Structure formats: C-alpha cells, structure tokens
Image (cartoon, rainbow, N blue to C red; front, top):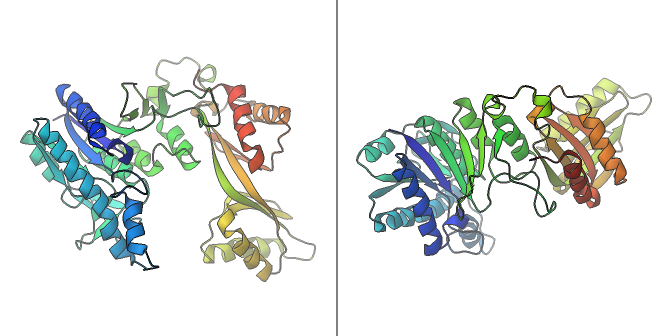
Length: 408
C-alpha cells in the first residue's frame, strides 16, 4: 500500500466549513492512489471550548494543581474529540473511516509525562483498517507507556506523531497542513516581501525551527530525516504546493556549483533573552570559575545559550524569565555579572553557506548600514547567529533579508 500521512492543526478543524476543506484534501489523496492516514490536533486555540489550553484552564480554575499524570489524561481529550468528529465528517462524505487514539494506533512512549518521547510504533491496527478500505484518523500529541499510562508529547506533538507514523508505515510522504502556505524566508509580519520556499533540506528546517520558526516542530523533522521520508508543509485553505522538506542531495540535485545557488534559505529569531557577561578578575582561578559558572546554573535547571568563553570573560544568554535567578546564583559564587536584558537572537540559515567565504562579512555590512550593534556572534556549518538588542531586531531582519534575498 502507498501510505501518505496528513496532519491537520487545530485551526483547520474549528468548524464544519473548515473540516469539509480537510475532507477534500484527504479524498484528493485517496483519489491519487494513496491510503491516507490523518493525524489531528485539538480543535482551535485558547478560548475555544475543546482546545488543549482551554481544557487546562478549566481544571486549574481556583488555583487547583494537576499532577503530570492527570494533566496528560486531560490534555489527551482534545485530540480524541477532534479525531472522533473528523472521522464522522469523513464518513458523512460517503467514505469509510475509523478513529484511533494514540494507544490504539500503537504509539509507545517513555514515562516522561507532559513531554514524552516515542520509543516505537506498532502500526498493525492502522494497516489492518487501511486494508479494509478505511481512512484512519489518529489522535496526535499522545501515546501510551508500556504499562498503559497515557502520555502527551509536548508542544508540537502532533507533528511528531505524524512523522513517527510516516516512518513506521514507510509512507510516500508526510504532509503537515497549517494556516500558512509553507516555510517563509522570514516572518512576513516583519518582512513585507518574505517569500515561501519551494524546497529546503532537513537540516535547514531543523535550524529554522530551533531558532524560532513555528511552522513545524524540529523533533518531527529529525524523525523523518532518519528514513529520508519527504515532508511537505502546505496550507489547508489553498492549493499552493507548499514547501517540500527533503535531503540535501534532492534540494541541490543537478546543481553544478552550489555556491551559485541559494546561500541563505531563511532568517528567523528568538526574543525575550538576556545577555550575561562575567569578567574573571585577577587572582581568580580561571578554569575553576568557568566550571563553577556553568555547574551552578545547570544544577538550578537554567538553560544557557549563545556561549562564548574566553580566558577573562564568559558571555552567554538565558531567558528573561530566569535572568534574575541566574544573577543571584552567580553572585553567590563570588562573581558580579553584567546583564543586558531584552535581547534577540537572529539566525541566518542556509545549507548553501558551507564553505562559502564572505557570508559573515555581508551580515556585518548589512547591520552596520543600519547602525545595529552586534553584541555576540556564533556560527555552525549551516547557521550564523547574531545577538542584537530587541528594539533593533526587526530592522536587523529586514536588512539581512535585503542583503541576501533568500527565496529568489
């Protein structure tokens, strides 16, 4: 059988009109000779009656606390509701369909409530129903432990469900349907001429997702990448082709010189971060203080990013929300950190930059023209990051988009 996995987010399921558009996409895939497996998120967003955040707000009203186990049971209800309704809508169109929970679909996870990881998928029930001619609808975002306890997969978990099913079924493709027409070269709310990308590599989309792009969860991309399952990001409400995510070889197939192809794929950002600078004073044991700084933050569960370590200076960033706690911890070990709150991390991503000289020079040139101060920088083979003040972030992104013109 030729399986295709189609995942639909909550905004695609909010009412009957929207759900009929989903059915049209599903039946179109069936007419093309595929056996569709449909993964659904909870209906709508906070404030709408069956959204996950709404269900949690009901339970927590009056300052009631939920254990992680009970919150997972509650959070799994949203996808069950939307899955049952979606299966019924498909049946109403005249096509047989059946709904399966994550457990019934064979999704086995570890025991980490609220942020479980999929250990294995046994797709036998899905295959059985598909062989009977049914369209299988599966609840996203959830699974079950080997002991039978319901778990959820964390934010973006429905993307992860779709990716894991795609690999287990050896699907022809995984389609992630959203309310946008694919991956954009930059946030269109910041860059007016941002363009949708036709094709990107797995590594590029992982970097974009990790650095703030919200269209796809990076864990889902990492799963399909293991088996080279193509992933496509499309809009439920249009016939646009969307963005195809595939291997580096497929993206650059036939290219004679990739340095003349797309150097930069996209530009994204993360906000609400604080830069912390620690100066190691004369007389201090440099090596010992380097160890103490990161040990004490790790023990407190504070994640650090954008790390630059020099003999006399240590620079890194933390979320704004934990900055005060981090400063207090560092003062407790005898250092006086300097802090710069409300910064933004801007990432320039592109597999084509590997081995290409002058990319950083162009970044500095573009930002210098706008008189933007680069507070820190770092790079990998597919990404260059710069730290800027939050109030200079938007003009930084716009300047970099003009400089590199990704998507052309």
